[in-house]
Image (cartoon, rainbow, N blue to C red; front, side, top):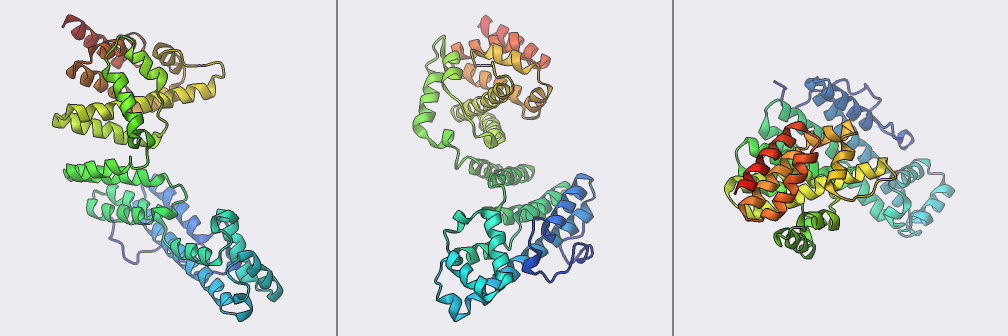
Length: 368
C-alpha cells in the first residue's frame, strides 16, 4: 500500500536546485523531467517512486511559476517600465534598454511555449497565465492513476477532480475527457451509477454530433425510417470524428440498455457505431490512397489486412457495439436496418467470433 500524500520525496536535488532562475527555462525544466520519470516508474509498476516523482514535478512547476511571476512583477514595478503600458512588445524594448535579462528570458520562454498571439500583446494576460500554470494537472492525473491501481478510490477521485479543476492548463486539452472517463470508472466501481452517468455525459458536452440536435435528429430519422436501404444510406451520409467520445457512447448505451431505457440506448448505440465506423474508414483511407468508401463489406474487407486496426477494434469493443446496435434495432422493430447490418456482419466481419455470432442472430431474425 502506498503511503498517502505527505512529504515523501526522492531527493529534491535529483534534477537541480529548487532555486529556479529565468535562465533555466527550457523544455527540460525540472518539473517535466520529474514527470517523465514518474511516467516511467508507473509503467514499470513502481508506484512508490512514481508517486514521489509526481510530487516533485508538482513542486517544481509551482516554484517555476512563482519565480517567473516575481521576475515580471519586479520589472513592472519600475516606473519606466510602467510607462510602456500593457504592451509586451513595448515593455520588451524597455527591458532590453535596462538589460533585464531574467524578465526578457521569461517573456521569450512563454512566447516559445504558447506563441505570441496567445497573449494578445498583454503583459497582464501573460502574468495571469503564469499564475494559472502553477498547477500540474498531468501529474495530478497520474497520482490519481497510481491510487486507482492501488484500489484507493477516494484518493484517486480526489486527484482526478483536481486535474479537472486545472484542465484549462493541460498541454493536451482533450485529456480532460480521459479524466472524466476515469472518474466515471471510479463511480462504476463504487456502484454510484448516477454519478457515472453524469461523468460520462460530461465527455460529450463539446461533441457536435451529440449537441447538434438538428444533425442528430436527421441521423435518427435515417435509422428509424426503417426502409430497406436505410442502413446503406446511414453509412453513406454520416460521419462522426469526435473519437474521444467512443468509450462514453458505448458505456452510456450499455447503461441505458441495462435499465430498459431502449430509446435512449438507441441514441448512444447509433453514435457509438457511427464513431467506430468513421474511425476505421479514416485510418484505411489514410493508408490506401486508392480507397473510397462504397459499402460496409468493402470496408470490413480492407481492415482485415491491418492487424493494428483489428486490435483497436477489439480494445474498444467495436464489434460488440455493432451487435448491441442490432439487438436494440430489433427490439424497437427497426428490422430492415438490423437485417441489412447483420447480413454484412455475418458475411464480412473480420473477427471470427462476431461473424459467427452475427450468423446466429441473423438466423433468429429471419425466422421471426
